[in-house]
Image (cartoon, rainbow, N blue to C red; front, side, top):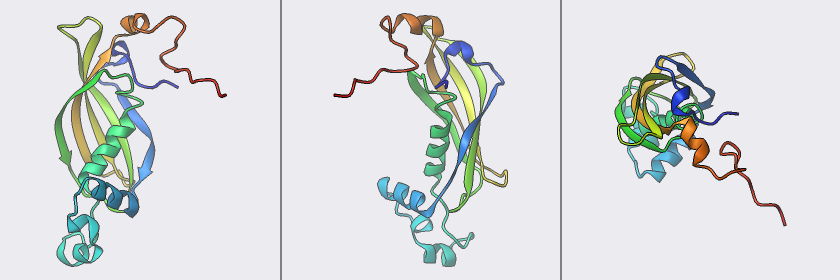
Length: 171
């Protein structure tokens, strides 16, 4: 199975549908909030959300949805990345709730060779996240620096397959 792409393998306009989706649980949302110290009651307090919010229930913290979509895109987009250079924009378009399933897809917007290093290029992509009903919930654009295939082969010692790292023999 391919993990990421080399610069030459990206085509402007290509769309990568990320699979599988992820059903967001209350536990996922609360753990992410606690790990990131986001204790806003809209995410953590069911009574508050029911009585003081327009949604009448907890809303999943947006940065979890962004992180989930970013992670979903790694095997298709940045699995071979040298660096994630920039998140150009991030929009939370609709709320996500406990029990929603998130699906993602990424479109290649642009690519250019590096002006300073001939062994790499920069790819611009837009990732969109949808819930189980097809409602757009999150969209972001980012730039990723990826290696060129011809140089990747020379950067790895002979006999080592960069696609399949070796593991130590069991003792």
